[in-house]
Length: 151
Image (cartoon, rainbow, N blue to C red; front, side, top):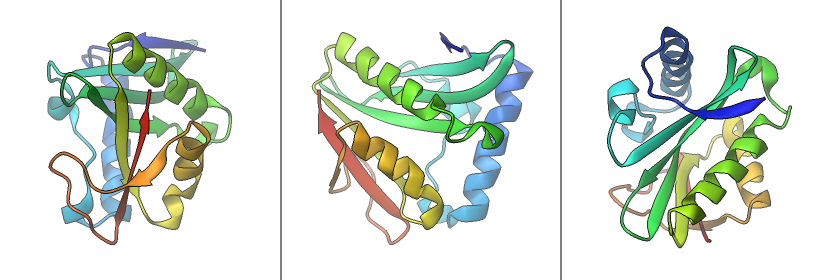
């Protein structure tokens, strides 16, 4: 497997992210869904990576620079048929290292509070993320939780 910067121009990643957004809409009420679509991810402050196994996209994730010292993990997804295969851990580790390389001193994220998101929360906890108050423009709701760590 390899992790590559993705310019989000290919049909494969468009379909992969469309599946992500559709699934989040099924699980999370609209007011608590923060998954970005392709246009939302094509912003200069966001770096997006795809995880490839051969030519197949098996995961993705992004780093959004919030300010000079603070970044946010966005759009983490593992292909449903490849969950629990280490792809998420590979990608979180990569994003943490990239954030350090950019000189960020804090990395945060928002994820769901539903049982569906429990494996993701455990993954983030393993990487040193702790629960925190909402950051940036987020607002607390019963449907989401916030996590952060220093780098």
